[in-house]
Image 1 (cartoon, one colour):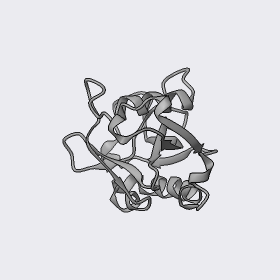
Image 2 (cartoon, rainbow, N blue to C red):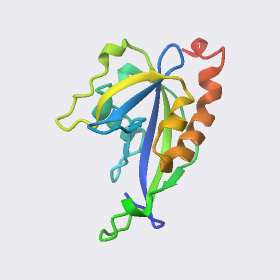
Image 3 (cartoon, one colour):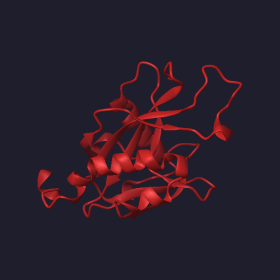
Length: 164
């Protein structure tokens, strides 16, 4: 779904473990790392899109995670001109995302990057909350910074574990 301004509706997922570290995945066959994310389909809520993308990209289901929160507003990034497909309609110039903070409530062995026939990732690891800001592709950097800053108080709080 692309809005009238050219932004594709999308969800982003920050998945944490018991230690407050975050799930960081490498795009299949590339040296590019990112959080799970994906488009919202027509007539699909952002919550349903999040669960669908989580399953497709990590093999995790709703019962494997707990929603800790989501952003109140869309976070947007524009695509570099070289990535804009000029011959498509409607023209997509970037993405607008609702971000979710999830807590893994099962053992990490439930992660399955080959859950679908067309996996998006080929490797994953747990990293410090702030690492992705400097490691993600540059045009996504400001959105990652906004999402991480939004959720940081929840993840880094001494009360984090007590909320479960």
